[in-house]
Image 1 (cartoon, rainbow, N blue to C red):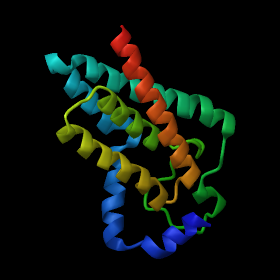
Image 2 (image 1 turned 90 degrees about the vertical axis):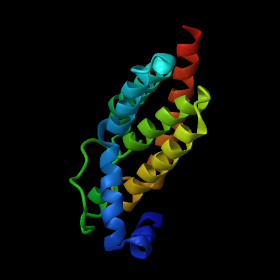
Image 3 (image 1 turned 60 degrees about the vertical axis):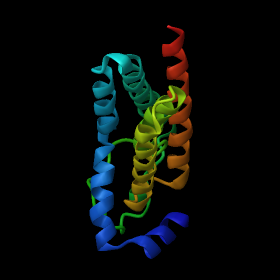
Length: 166
C-alpha cells in the first residue's frame, strides 16, 4: 500500500516534529478561519475575508457532516492499529480529508479573487503541507486527501463566484 510505503521511507523524528504542528494548524480549519477574519477586518479585503470564512465552513459541513457521514470510511490507523500515531485519533470518517478541504477552499478563494502572490503562494504551500501531513500522520488515505482537495477547490471557487455575484 502506498501509505505504508510512505511510512517506511519518510518517517523520521525530525519530520515528526514538523508534521505534527503543521497538521494542528489545520484543526477545525483554524488557520484559514483566522486568515478570513484578518482579511475581513481590512476594509479593502472584507469581501475576500468573508468568502474565505464561508468557503472553509461550507467545505467542512459538506465534507464531514454530509459526505463523511454517508461514506463512513475507516481511517488507515483503524485498519492498521499497529501503526503508532503521533496525534490523537481524529474523530469521524476518513473520507474526505477535512483538513485538506478547508485548506484548498481558502486557497481557491484567494486565487479566484486574484489576491497578491505574496499571500497566495505561502497559503498554497501551507495547504499542500497540511494535506501531506495527513498522509504522513497515517490518518488519511491518498484518495481522502485528493477528494478533500477537489471538494475544497470546488467550494472555494463557487463561494468566490457567489460572493462576487452578491
